[in-house]
Length: 94
Image (cartoon, rainbow, N blue to C red):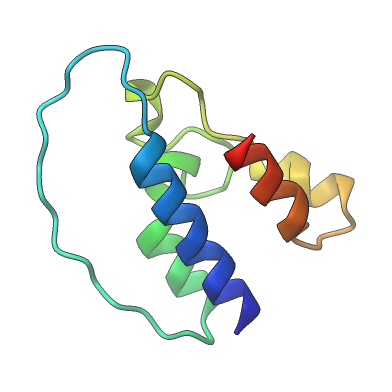
């Protein structure tokens, strides 16, 4: 449950702080709700566009961002596979 709120918070912060290198064409895409207990489903819906299918920061939206998305495979390796929510929150919010 806490992971769900962390991911939603991350999405909200990212939506407010996205910086683009050039003016992209803005496309509104409807939000597809996911199961709160499915991290895989939530990642595919909310994170993969920037972080990539494999979490390496190479998603289709990554090139349009001023700050490249983090390689989450490194983050996972550095924290024994755990998601350091406080560290990620601080990295996003500065």
